[in-house]
Amino acid sequence: MDKKPVVPVVEFREVSLAYGERQVLDRISFRISKGEFVYLVGPTGVGKSTLMRLIYSDLQADSGEIQVGDMQVNGISRKDIPYLRRKLGIVFQDYQLLSDRNVYQNIRFALRATGWRDAASGKQRIQEVLMQTGMVGKAEAMPHQLSGGEQQRISIARALINDPLLIIADEPTGNLDPEAGMRVMDILRRIHQAGASVLMATHEYTLIKEFPARVIELQAGRLRDYAQSQDFLSDYGQRLRM
Image (cartoon, rainbow, N blue to C red; front, side, top):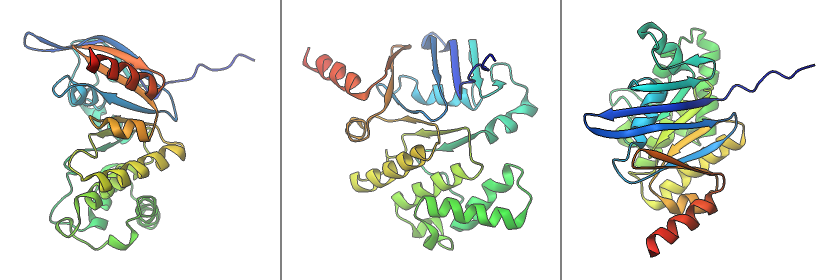
């Protein structure tokens, strides 16, 4: 019996995007398979956030094809964008929690936005993601009562609420001190080890050394793909010495 082809979690095929005369992405292609952890790296302003925004259709590519699960993203209709985003969990550098709602209410808001209507199972699911992120005791706390690291852990809990196909983390440790950043990174790695797919943009290469995984590097609109983090770190170190 023929095996069905494996559908990637995300695939870019010859994707290009320009801002005016600046070519941000130039015919880039890559795929992320189920259960992979992938770092996205490159200099500030190179297009890491742009690439991520293309995945959840906050931007549209000029050309090429983007696939998320079984959905074609390029040319997606406005009415289908909410369905696409239900497949994704997004973690931002600046947390983006609702300041007038407590931790439980912030996560419940995200749950309802994904179409979850069963109150009892929804409550159970909120408890599960709070346990995953070590934040069960903070359910009644307001965002301003939490440290930056705790707010980011709530952001991760919110991203997990709908058991997403892919977690997109855009510089999730960028605003944190090293200790809090390591705690957040440890949570993301444990989530990955439990079976989640993760794409994480970062400029903190010490994390890549501490938590090795595949690395995708953007440079001048083009892409380099390193199967092992050590290969990237060695190449990067050689460039610094040149």
